[in-house]
Image (cartoon, rainbow, N blue to C red; front, side):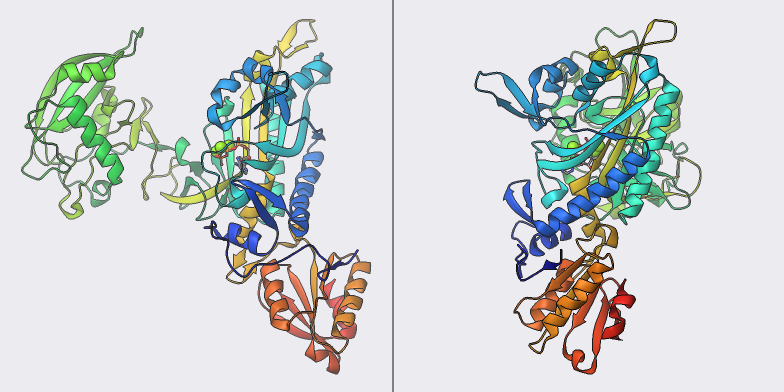
Length: 582
Ligand code: ATP
Ligand code: MG
Ligand code: MG
Ligand code: MG
């Protein structure tokens, strides 16, 4: 069936929607692919629905090819299962909760580990039944704190979620690897530029996990990449070698330039003033060269723990640590004062400076407040050129193996794989694969009888793809100032045939469209009564990869063939256009 714009349920807009900030949001609305129904809730119009279905088709084909079997679970779920797993509480405000007429609690599924575990438990019981991979493509519901950017972060959105069930760890690893390979094929086919980063597991629980991030400046995730290798990681999970002990003299410029945002500085200053120090002096937001800094060593231990942890707290030299106040603030953690050491104004010139290595060797952690911030980095104050030291700031949290978990990696840090240096970039999380292990199998006692007749706990993986988010991610990466540029695989049509003029051009456009369709292409024909300029603009906005213009040249037997991405145009004899386009 030819798609004819004269009756297609489509109205393009000239203006960007007022609430839109990122390109994909603006363009998907302007081009009539989606319409906002409520905050974070969107309607898919005919062309949008086609794109969404195309993404779903690619996902489905690759999931089937890797051995997945498609099912469809309900989105409306009783509370009890999520209570059993602990997620009724864990999910907090993100969960959409509702009651039925009898007052029983329900929720709208944000992700379906519980239900899939129970599904498999209901059907399978022998080790011979495993492994199995089940998946669905379904609307998910999350009451996001900040729904934003149109369908990029919706409160109702489309997700492909799959779950693997295996008898042992090797099986899980295999299922995980197969998913990973399928995801690579899927995102390649969608034409996305992406990186695979190691990630933390978040609310899902479990251990190994990797995220697929579509590279985009508008993305909400920050990741680091190496300049010289494939290494990439979400900043939440980055491990980078600890820098060498800071030199006593002449700290390299790069290490000094770490300026936290003003909010962080304020948090630190407030904490020092209100929690650590006595009331003897005014607060300050920067140190001068004339100031002294002293380190106070304390040891702490969590309630019930045997192990003391050493902490160093940097404070201005002319202020006293109010130990009682500190103890009260850290309660119920036990605190004991060890020693105070004076430091010269410039900590980099100071003798006895507690550098990272010393901290590691002594298992000392440099700390302001374990709940607020931990770290060892000296920072510059407001006046960057003078390297005024404000005290301490987060960034680096040293682990005993000499690596650092960083919340913020600095450009130029060494790559953990020893190849190249790191730089930060931003991305959109389009997929996430987890080795869940036995968290849900334990919660629901999912066992399989082994060959020895003994029950064996099943181990699981869970794997998500943001199907609706992927649509917007493609647009983020593939557009220009005139509109969207679809990769053919997910475009709502292969060819957009535009007829302009009143001398039979529209009829010819319909004829060509019909022929192209007969040759297996998906065709959109602009057969509207509208000015050529309007039609050309819409063709660019809609973003179908190949455009055929049947216009003025028809009198000489020519039509124009345009490539949306490159902008290349050529005149083609009418009789050849079908062969040239197919
Ligand atoms: P994010 O970090 O962006 O909030 P998430 O880590 O909470 O995502 P997962 O629980 O890993 O998301 O869900 C699997 C996939 O579902 C994500 O990788 C993402 O592509 C997609 N997704 C998650 N939340 C949303 C949302 N609010 N709108 C659209 N897609 C989403
Ligand atoms: Mg989330
Ligand atoms: Mg995430
Ligand atoms: Mg995730």
